[in-house]
Image (cartoon, rainbow, N blue to C red; front, side, top):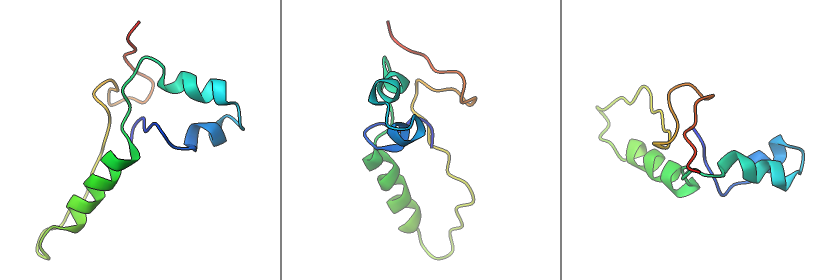
Length: 73
């Protein structure tokens, strides 16, 4: 998924630097773990004849390129 806040991912990514991790999400409304879980649940709840090939989740502040994030000032 795209930006997902409220997890330890960015803290691990920045080797425990909470300030750097917080800056990743500053000025954005990221996805939550619950958003991702709901999408996985939806996919798993489809009838047997439904094949879900791809799910791509991103918050509306993030474009298709991971480098482009709209931050509110």
